[in-house]
Image (cartoon, rainbow, N blue to C red):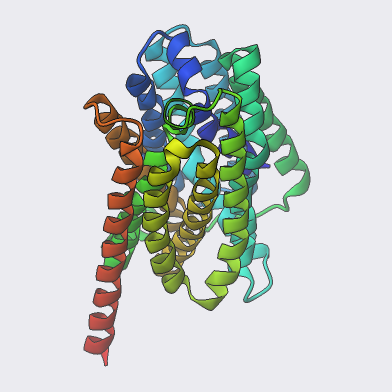
Length: 377
């Protein structure tokens, strides 16, 4: 439920970008900075809150984070201008990464041995279900009842999550051995840095497409506004399928899954750019991009948890900082190429380059791993 609330809040801004831009009287590329602001909030909030909350009872941390999330969404709903809305979106992002990091640790701790990967995938699947149900519904609501109504709905979902976590999640103590110095050891691990960099660059490819999907569907594909929720639904179904598949692929090989999903994203983003003018034909590559990106997300989470050593809380949370750097990077670069007059298909081509750059970082990570292993031998 927490993943559903967060996923709805994060991704509904893409489907409502034209309405929000009109509502606060800014251009589409400028409104795209609202998505970047949320991502920056995640980048800042994940390490800070994970660092401060590593020793605290985990159920209480989850409840507090969701109540803060509800307040930030309510602020977005009442924001009267672009500046306040930009701040509210930043504050919305702050609890995001820490919530998923702590929730992943709780899920892994409750899972039978050998099924931790699938348990973490089931936590992450809330994001995917949000893209099937929450984001299309919020987009429809925003188009018919005003974009502010979607943010009020997101705030309500966040409060509901806090209630359900209190009622249903077993008490989970924090890591009493955690210290600031111990958590910061994460940043002394070269493989942790490489994994974070791969997510920050490679995942940006998905957001270069997704941020401007409403404009591509209507302006490039020539479809009506009513087609946007259908594309978002297809994207959401792809995320559900990808998250489910990711758990099983992780049992096979986390690292090979990362390589395969990065390469697949590059190819599929190129296909999406090619088919965008064909209208409904672009639904299939949009679905498949979502599948590949979800496989990447889950396996990046597991990779970071495996290379974090003793810094488990910070390692689990930092994945979302990394991914949201990709979010901000993709949205920003996509806005730049649109503002430069290269058209609304150009962000998908930027996404191809970002996905390939992420793949290159993973190949460097593999080389470093082999060299380290050979040196140890």
